[in-house]
Length: 225
Image 1 (cartoon, rainbow, N blue to C red):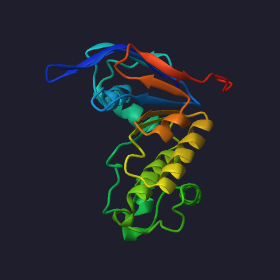
Image 2 (tube, rainbow, N blue to C red; image 1 turned 180 degrees about the vertical axis):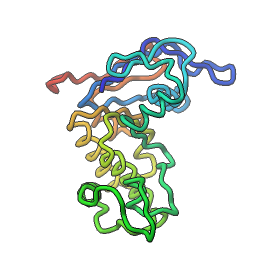
Image 3 (cartoon, rainbow, N blue to C red; image 1 turned 90 degrees about the vertical axis):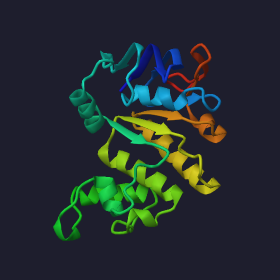
């Protein structure tokens, strides 16, 4: 699903955080929002994901203007199409790995949802065999992969990601970046706010926030620059 912002602006607490930002994020590609701390990367990501309303401009999902979506429409978008991987991972530490992926529970602790798909997704993200383990026991890198496992299990069409590699070691960083790349290769739209150079280099489109809508890297549909 294509995600597009046209000339969006937003002020928070009287301070202009976004000023006429425009970007087009295509399916099958990873788009990075880059720039120094405080430039508005996360704010732009949250606006694109309909977590924050904009003051001016428009946001389109697959050509449909979603700028004025009401609360019910936003919830439907989040439920049916979007997944978020935020800096706090969005993981429920007191719940099992299986519950955090499927978001379904049952009496007596039995796993609900598609067990075969759950097993496949956990294997893909390097968490196989840990279905019944409490998520609170996982390391930071493992929680990041667990959040991605949830998005893959859900088969989200759009993935919004905020600083995914900020606190990861080298091995986990590479694994997470490879998983995002594979997710995008299946025709999904991946939008990442990041300052990590390795993550930036893996993306197809780089949008420098606050720099007159500067696209500083653009890879076409056939992957030629």
